[in-house]
Image (cartoon, rainbow, N blue to C red; front, side, top):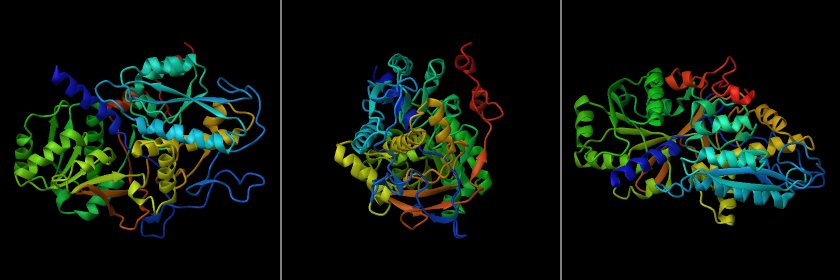
Length: 473
């Protein structure tokens, strides 16, 4: 029984955590490839009569008074706009999963309503807990409740929602997308796109600058689960363009391994000097690194952004996970005093009593993009208008919270940064300047995997897998 719980817990957390923010478009730089993250506001003009508009980073907060009126779509009346949000916090094997997303949405809705709502209409937010396995129930209920749009939600098994979501025309601006079908879905816009047919390689390029010799003998270690297999397949297909040569590929059980010694021995025997690990930090990655430390095996390790989380850092008091390099497209929480948008996110959650995390920042970007688009629609607030406006936004950074992205193009970023785990803290590795990111247009690589085929993309890269539901057939 314990084995079954452990296996399920690993699977639950792996799906959610492996999403880390992947996305975007390039930003102009001075030729060095390193750019600051602040930029002139590109959104709503200051509210009439307001000398000092409320800002989130370099973005004017997209809420305020107005005279918007009319019952223009499902979930919209003169008196309110009803949105849905949610997470997998009710999972019995991983309680609290993703709750930071909902903490962020609740804080943002409160702040938005304090400022006057969307064009004068207050927002009422309905919470839906998918508990990992109940996403279909959550979406069915949201449809029955007459929700206008889903905003800032994140559900691990989002492919199971798609037919139901499209049948009721429920549009979404999610915190993240897991499945290829949802990552390329109709009636959805991601603020930080994570398409299945592309992968960002900024992290790979930046690590290659730091360790050009070590990457010539690289290895991958990944769990036998679709999410980790997909991310690893992308690594193997694209990292060689940055000089990586892979000498070993090892797959481990999603339940974790009783003994990681064979993995360490195989990596050492292959002469691997740089190891990509795909999975969750706790317990699998920590257990592998502790075994490697005991055996004196010390390559460079590189991971996805899911390794950037407080519990992972706190667990490294023994330093066994040092030399872990983590690719990021969001600016780290440690730079709240340097990056205004990060500081505003931290302040907002501190005021509301919510928990902060990378997932929370992803939900924040989703809400701000949705609110920016909804405000632009004025009285003609419809799902179609919001999607159109959101797709028209260029160089989206959520006020400087992350690298620039192109939501409408659904493309991954040309910008990024690397963090390093040192003891119980995350430190900036590359580029070294606080608040900066590195950019290069070549850091976007196309990929072709079975997951792309499963999504049945059309010429516009939109999934047709559930087109029948959308068309009512």
